[in-house]
Image 1 (cartoon, rainbow, N blue to C red):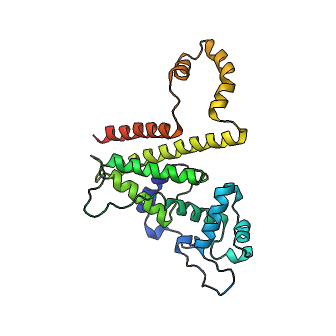
Image 2: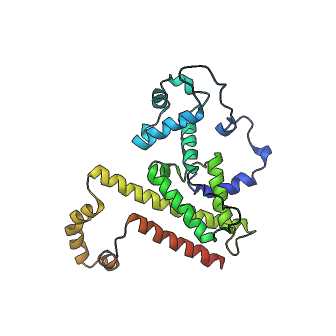
Image 3: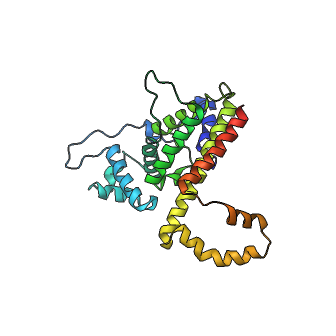
Amino acid sequence: MSAPDIIYAETIFMTPHHTIDPTSPTPIWDRPEPPARRTPHPLSRELIVGAALELADADGLEGVSIRRVAAALEVGPMRLYGYVDTKDELLDLLADAVYAEIVPPAPAPGHPSQDWQSGLRLIATLTRRAALRHEWFPELLGGRPHLGPNALAALEARLSVLNTAPNLTGRPTELRRAAAAFHAYLVGALRTELAQRHADRSENRSEEQWRKAMSPYLGRVLDAGRHPLLAEVIVGAEHPTPAAEFEAGLEIVLAGIAAQTS
């Protein structure tokens, strides 16, 4: 499934429960943890996720495995099974832990809620902060849907904010499309920004240093006159910080949603 996460909401809530295959594995969210045991090294899903988060933040998703998490917790790998059966389930738990950082706080009693555009800006800011803390997180977006409690809370928050926009209340199809466009921008922008970060580290040079190194070659190509608009953009456009670029792109998306709902 390559569509943005928000698109699966329609499938989830329109699928009759009796059509679900009863032989399918029980989702980890519906499985209780094994009973607690008296041991020098107690286990829980919370402890497992905490250890996996540290590994992922240090080494990326390729550094996460059942064996490495078990070693970090000083237990044998077999003890983790039952808490989590596969690496995919472990990644689901990891993603849901990050979604907890994205759910915006509820408005304080007696204070009016933000307008929908301010609400989406807050969600975008929280999402970018979480992605910069956990650079592996955007790799998990846009694939299989995330159905953990924090992921669903984040989805509900996004829909609740957009539901206050003009002409979206009571129009689930239009609401879904607007939320999908917003989510697709976040995924694309964050993946681009983090790919640049990774390139800077792997090449041991900044984007500015890379541009200077490529400048003679690109200058010769553009001087040939075959790409006039590209030359105009490269020469005349500003080169803002990643944060400013993210915010500018977000405003274009918000303006597009506003145009559709006015």
